[in-house]
Image (cartoon, rainbow, N blue to C red; front, side, top):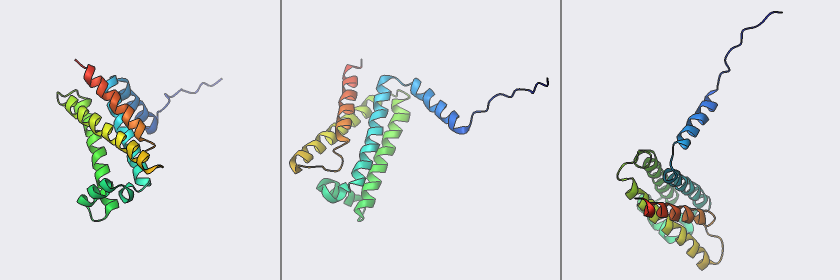
Length: 155
């Protein structure tokens, strides 16, 4: 009987990328994971707002988008992409690397997302029906409050 040599099984790029991402997640503490979840929730929230064309129905969104561009849709996209880029920067550097400023950035995010979540819920109650962003607003609010609780308890 002829024996063929065995070769080590090669991992493909996708497997290595997932393994690297899981390794980062395993090394995150609860505070870092909560902050990351909040940024991810904001990304989902932004998609919901964009799909619902928030800049057309919510006067503050129309105003802020108009400050950036005369094309309100473009202004809305620029603001949301910038917000998410800032959130990712906060997560990858100050929060992940435990800079002294991390708590300040996290308090900013906790406050902003709490206001965002409450604002969407109140606007929906006032309108009496669905408004863009309300489906993801409770997740934002819950994560923001949980992050604030962690910050409050942090020594």
